[in-house]
Image (cartoon, rainbow, N blue to C red; front, side, top):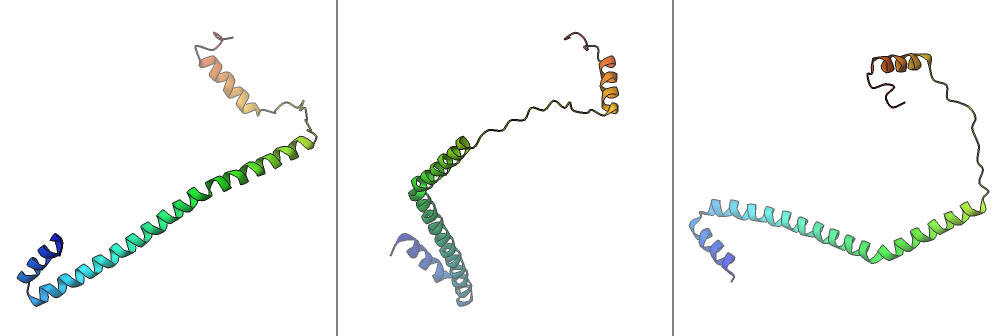
Length: 111
């Protein structure tokens, strides 16, 4: 028997039957929770292990897709449009900007 089992048995000797029953039920619940946690940890460890194993495969897949996309872009003619249209600014914004410039003491120093 290990130390924990010995101590546990010593403590159980001091408990009444009802207390012992409650203690054993409590221990069973704790063991079930621990088992669930251990199972979850094992799943997570296996998941990350698989990720590590497949990392190179995924990286190669991404590179192939990127090369294919780049090849498609090079074969398509680039269409550029020169826009000579000026943005229309609402009059309220222009008036507001002029007010800010008049009230701003630093306006005009940088111009």
